[in-house]
Length: 89
Image (cartoon, rainbow, N blue to C red; front, side):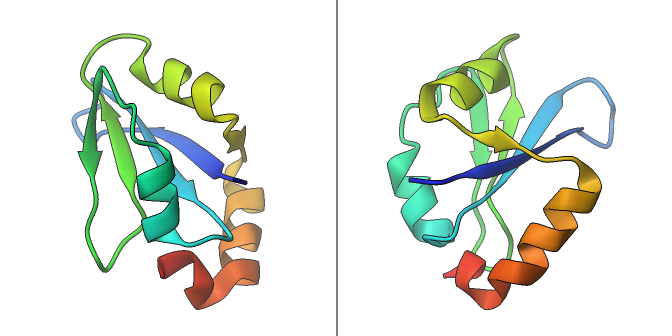
């Protein structure tokens, strides 16, 4: 499964976050990425899924385990626009 990611930080700035986007849709990506040790999963029906690191290395492990392609902000916005509503299924 193709999954794209955008790294960031929580609003407190102390924790790494990863927001994910997939052509297969939000629900399919959430089911696919079921091993999330060291992370808190934030999955809401109206937003893309986010993973918040609660143990150092959790985001890096998720990226490696599932082959997530990291994008910069510009590429992320372009990919979101390209996928449109399909990303939120």
